[in-house]
Image 1 (cartoon, rainbow, N blue to C red):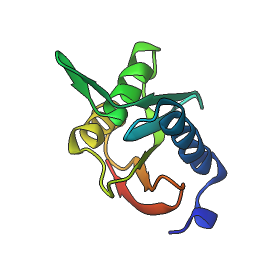
Image 2 (cartoon, rainbow, N blue to C red):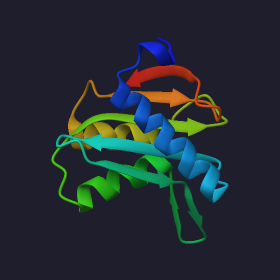
Image 3 (cartoon, one colour):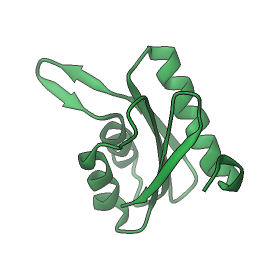
Image 4 (tube, helix red, strand yellow):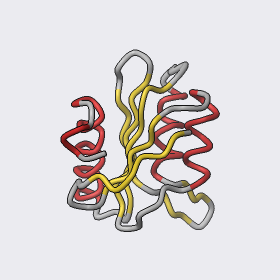
Length: 115
């Protein structure tokens, strides 16, 4: 799949994650869209007492805002893989089959995995 084949709403998730990553100079950022169309964007948290991947945090933000499910997620990072714990968090909230798009810092889609 290429960026041109992505649903425009999924491409928006990549754009939001890219902007958050650049704004915070973070190694990784993620965006998720809940069942009502609301989006949540987060970057990695790496504190001495708390470590969360950007995808875990974006899912946690959705849950704390009342989301009951997710439609899609995107992760933008230098590395070409999503944190397994982040994909598991997507699955915990939304069940299996939710697309998690993985993109490079330039926004180019690398791959899509499912929760």
